[in-house]
Length: 622
Image (tube, rainbow, N blue to C red; front, side):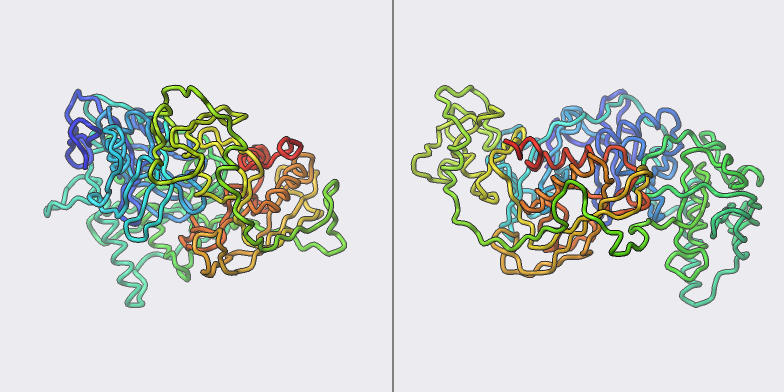
């Protein structure tokens, strides 16, 4: 549904060579498990482009600009994204779009998932939606792009044609994607997965083809229950962690000899970097190949990956954690070695080591050592299933927080996207006595203006708890409550310290929610919901700010805001209890998953998240 001159993709061959001296917007994308190309954010794309200018055949550490992407590295030579903690590799590509399209303007279209988080559309869908929006179409059918959804611009919603379920969508202004002019480096035009019938003879294709052939041979030998002929794994180095291994690629490429004698290790290896850990500031790996030179063409001593000392591994070199190096688990050591060969050939020194395990719980604590938290009354809060109160009249709720505007300005109502001086876009959809479609009101504290009928529609589509949230600045009027199922929250003091708080004891919070049946306020009333992973243990330092966070978390729990029922972002399971945008630390003695300590900004971040839900000390005193 792309239109000429309106955000169309620039013509390219393979992954590169658009017309020279033509300005175009660059969007880097990765291929997910559903064969959809998902765009990186504009910030990440700018970072990749900056690295590309320095070394077109190097590697990009994504964690430098996005803490959520700490485990990921992009190898620009093979055009693959590599995840360090699992060894997963996915193709990436460098796409080009017209500067007048959505990515060139920094416009992002997003839809709201069951957990209340916003997810960006694929770039082709984003551009199509923006084109229709600019042409002032009232709606858009995405079936031509393979999706059974209708987009309604008046209500800013997405509807599933089959289930008739609606979700909110929004148009957000973000950083514009990078702009480039001229030809792109030849290394970027390598066609990932392209097949022309005749194999390419370049070094990169030879590397990938031989690696694929070797891994297929290993899998075939496993099916025959006969291990491939390979030298035994070396013993761990003295003083190094168990399972440390040095990978050295073989000089033989087209033949059957794929393994060379490992180098001798004499010192400890670099610890593995884990997902969610604070991003490092890596420098360029030493020994990276110069453009046009393949690492496998080097003499043997230069080709070996040495782990003789910690200093031999430069800061930021990817450590590849492997769960099992004995061949008894799901990861075969030979397959791990082939991954090491691929990365070494791209100029990435690799250290294979066992992945450290997160420390989720403290040492055992006796009942006599468990104490109440100072300044916080009680040790437990329970929430019972609240019967739905009689629905408060939506018109009365809206009028409570708004003042009528006699002469509204000539600007858009951000709910229906119609001008405030005209009738509401919900005219004909909703009919309420006393709320005429042309009436406009101003919210008391923030001053944003909307059609009264639009706010009535927004309130009627929400939790109907007597509170109102400004769709522009998210200011909350009244007391916001959620849809958390009934359960129990316990909190107490334990005599152990968190990383980064050596002289402070720890507040432990235990949430417990049983499985049950969804109520009228939930996505599927009457249907059973699951509650995975309960009881869930969370941790705070026992200092002034930690106790403040605990008091506000208790308020949020009582307002049913900590959890909700939706679809898990981790497992994809629907109708299950999920976190509700208030992050907790569930890892006690480490930070390997990103949900632990040390984290200097966590307490301030969670206070901001609580404030966004209308839970703050100022709101409590108001």
